[in-house]
Image 1: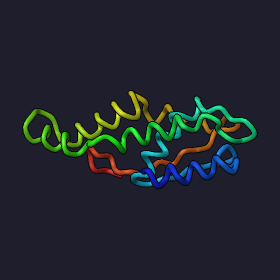
Image 2: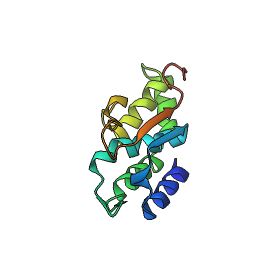
Image 3: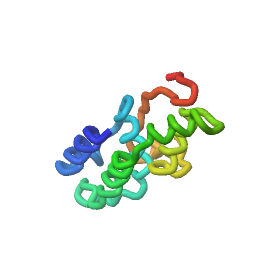
Image 4: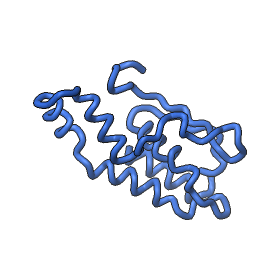
Length: 127
């Protein structure tokens, strides 16, 4: 997840992020792509560089600084609800704040990339 944000930082620095037509991701990169997608409408581009890209960086850092698994495992064992439900709630609380896949940018609009998110649903274990 943090590695991928580094790649996005570089794409932004050289003015290519705004020009990307499709962002495809897998696993931890999908977390970063989800953060980018849900932040896209808030990014302010000047000369093809998002001058406020810290929005994305700080959201990823916030999750990186959060211990999700320990609390989810302990809570899932001792309290009602599953471990995967607790992990999903933690991601939502820290990163997504209720956003859903349909909240990603509309790629039919100029300047919006298509987001292709490849991940396993932690609640169902389905792709």
